Amino acid sequence: MTSVFGRFVSKVREINHRYREPKIKLTKWTRAILLTLRVYLFFLVGILVYAFILNVR
Amino acid sequence: MEPDGSKPIRPSGRNSVRGLGLVPTLYYHYRRFRKHLAILLAVIGPGIIVMVADNDAGGITTYMVTGAQYRYSFIWIAILLWPVAYVCQEMTVRLGAITKRGFAEAIFDAFGTFWGWFSLADLTITDLLTIVTEFVGMTVALSIFGVPPWITVIIVIAFIMAILLNGRYWTWEKIVLALCAVNLVYVPAVFFVHPDLGAILHTGLIPGFPYGFTSPVLFLIMANVGTTIAPWMIFFQQSSVVDKGLKEKHIPYARLDTAIGAVFTVAVAIVLIVIASYFFGGTGVNVPDAGTAARLIRDVNPFLGSLLVIGLFDAGLLGAIAVSLASTWSVGEVFGWAHSLNDRMGQARWFNLFRLTIMVIAGLVVLVPRAPLGLITLFVQVIAVTLLPATLVFLILLLNQEELVGKYRNSRIQNATSGVIVGTILVLSTLFGIGTLFPHLFGV
Image (cartoon, rainbow over all chains, first blue to last red; front, side, top):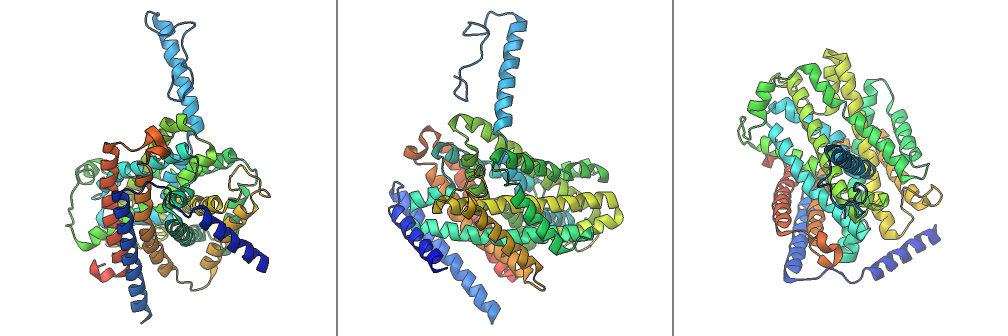
């Protein structure tokens, strides 16, 4: 079990290393779109957490 | 050169059919047609499967509720969704055929690990929950025929794994295409209800809101859009194109495959709206889901009701097959496992184990007494909304990288069209997600 978990962790590290640098050409537009996506994502996750807290209460 | 890159078929020794008689010219066109048809039949598959599987158990519920509540009024929305589905899925065809890699791998490579892990984790969770809803649809359908849920779950999982035993993509695809044909049982079913074509043409095809533009109407429109475009579809079709080995020369045929699939999706959606409208429109009967609708229709018309039950089961089965593959293919690509349907069970053991695990978990959730299935359905919709914007935006960004897709990059018109479509979907799906979490905002 430990070795399976260890192999999984090392595989994840390998993937993180392999895809460390985004290969897309980062123009101003692309940067702006990716930033907007991050903000949008945090907004949605915030709403999800808020709804969850309301439901638990 | 022909569209597929091969040399054109010409009558002996000629470069043109000009100057030939009628019979040789006709023969030339016949040979040409036969050749294109043969290639099309070989390429056809991923587009039809993804589109027909999109009409899964949840989708069928959405269409039946739409027809039961608003009769033919929103058939135009289903028609409008045809180009929407086509534009989104066509981009995956180009990306898959040119890059020869799945969408998850493309995201990791182009956008780095943050977006890569986010997409992979979100896709896997959404798919797992979606498969739960597919199992719910299948168990409800077969329980109408008296089959206990646990038997349904075991048979379905065994079937889904068994169709991979052969270790050949083609075999798998033929079986799934046969299931897609079964999904079309809804189409002849519409002739049993003798729909009022005049009313369909007058109220269904002309865009408008005869019931007013109220919050519940907006919510239902958003549900229809949400059921037509889902993140798993993008991941599934691209991986499927890659696994099938489609190349650049096959793109025109794969586009046609996608367009035909989109027609099937819309046809089934319209037929379901018409059937639900015929039986429940204006009656005030509450139709919460497709299973209830099929049961009620079966009480009135046993043959038609049974057809609907079979269709619901088939929709759930197709959905489970496609959705489970979308995430399994994606995880396999990223982790570097053998992940082709051409691999034998033993060769792709992690791939098959992962898929089996997903389905067993989903099946067990359905069998747990008093499992919060309503809550799960709610979360499927909301979590899918968190992934959809990123998926569609990444798709457009990748299709604008000339060094990645060369001459198949999006044109300005394609960017404008897909930009408008994606923008609209984003607004509607975000509102849908918020409306699902806070129903009082939409009065539903």
